[in-house]
Length: 91
Image 1 (cartoon, helix red, strand yellow):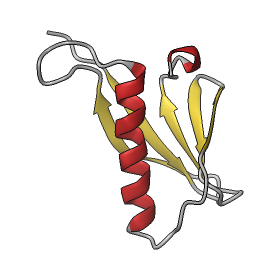
Image 2 (tube, rainbow, N blue to C red; image 1 turned 30 degrees about the horizontal axis):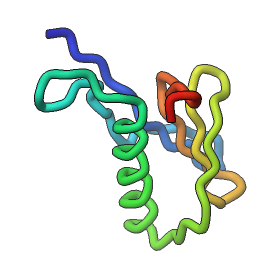
Image 3 (spheres, rainbow, N blue to C red; image 1 turned 90 degrees about the vertical axis):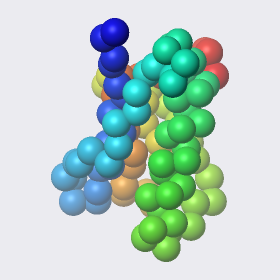
Image 4 (cartoon, rainbow, N blue to C red; image 1 turned 30 degrees about the vertical axis):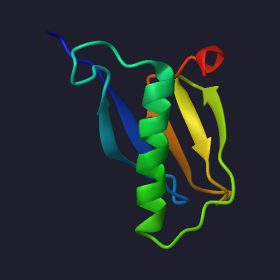
Protein backbone atom coordinates (compact mmCIF):
# COMPACT_ATOMS: atom_id res chain seq x y z
CA UNK A 1 0.00 0.00 0.00
CA UNK A 2 1.28 3.47 -0.88
CA UNK A 3 1.46 5.54 2.29
CA UNK A 4 1.66 9.30 2.16
CA UNK A 5 2.60 11.56 5.03
CA UNK A 6 2.04 15.04 6.30
CA UNK A 7 5.25 16.81 7.21
CA UNK A 8 5.30 18.82 10.41
CA UNK A 9 7.66 21.79 9.94
CA UNK A 10 8.91 24.27 12.54
CA UNK A 11 9.87 27.74 11.31
CA UNK A 12 12.04 29.64 13.76
CA UNK A 13 12.33 33.38 14.18
CA UNK A 14 15.56 33.26 12.19
CA UNK A 15 13.55 32.11 9.16
CA UNK A 16 15.10 28.63 9.12
CA UNK A 17 12.80 25.63 8.89
CA UNK A 18 13.18 22.02 9.96
CA UNK A 19 10.99 18.97 9.94
CA UNK A 20 10.08 17.85 13.44
CA UNK A 21 7.69 15.00 12.57
CA UNK A 22 6.15 13.06 9.73
CA UNK A 23 2.55 11.96 10.21
CA UNK A 24 1.30 8.92 8.33
CA UNK A 25 -2.00 9.46 6.53
CA UNK A 26 -3.06 5.87 7.14
CA UNK A 27 -4.19 4.46 10.48
CA UNK A 28 -2.91 1.19 11.89
CA UNK A 29 -6.14 -0.41 10.65
CA UNK A 30 -5.13 0.50 7.09
CA UNK A 31 -7.84 3.11 6.56
CA UNK A 32 -7.10 6.72 5.76
CA UNK A 33 -7.02 9.15 8.70
CA UNK A 34 -9.44 12.05 8.60
CA UNK A 35 -8.13 15.60 8.69
CA UNK A 36 -9.58 15.83 12.19
CA UNK A 37 -7.51 12.81 13.32
CA UNK A 38 -4.39 14.32 11.74
CA UNK A 39 -5.11 17.63 13.50
CA UNK A 40 -5.35 15.83 16.85
CA UNK A 41 -1.97 14.19 16.21
CA UNK A 42 -0.43 17.49 15.13
CA UNK A 43 -1.65 19.24 18.27
CA UNK A 44 0.00 16.56 20.44
CA UNK A 45 3.29 16.98 18.55
CA UNK A 46 3.17 20.78 18.94
CA UNK A 47 2.41 20.49 22.66
CA UNK A 48 5.26 18.03 23.23
CA UNK A 49 7.67 20.23 21.19
CA UNK A 50 6.74 23.33 23.22
CA UNK A 51 6.74 21.48 26.56
CA UNK A 52 10.29 20.26 25.88
CA UNK A 53 11.33 23.91 25.46
CA UNK A 54 9.35 25.23 28.44
CA UNK A 55 7.17 27.31 26.11
CA UNK A 56 3.62 27.73 27.39
CA UNK A 57 0.89 27.74 24.74
CA UNK A 58 -1.93 30.16 25.52
CA UNK A 59 -3.73 29.81 22.19
CA UNK A 60 -3.41 28.19 18.78
CA UNK A 61 -4.54 29.96 15.61
CA UNK A 62 -4.74 27.87 12.44
CA UNK A 63 -5.03 28.89 8.77
CA UNK A 64 -3.99 27.70 5.31
CA UNK A 65 -1.35 29.65 3.40
CA UNK A 66 0.99 28.86 0.50
CA UNK A 67 0.23 25.12 0.41
CA UNK A 68 0.57 24.58 4.17
CA UNK A 69 -1.61 24.69 7.26
CA UNK A 70 0.01 27.22 9.61
CA UNK A 71 -0.17 26.96 13.42
CA UNK A 72 0.54 30.08 15.48
CA UNK A 73 1.07 29.20 19.16
CA UNK A 74 1.67 32.75 20.36
CA UNK A 75 5.38 33.38 19.88
CA UNK A 76 4.75 36.08 17.21
CA UNK A 77 7.84 35.03 15.22
CA UNK A 78 7.84 31.20 15.22
CA UNK A 79 5.25 29.03 13.51
CA UNK A 80 4.50 25.40 12.80
CA UNK A 81 3.52 24.36 9.29
CA UNK A 82 1.83 21.18 8.09
CA UNK A 83 2.31 20.11 4.48
CA UNK A 84 0.05 19.32 2.68
CA UNK A 85 -2.81 21.45 3.99
CA UNK A 86 -5.75 20.25 6.00
CA UNK A 87 -9.28 20.86 4.72
CA UNK A 88 -10.40 23.57 7.15
CA UNK A 89 -14.06 22.95 6.26
CA UNK A 90 -13.75 19.34 7.46
CA UNK A 91 -12.45 20.26 10.92
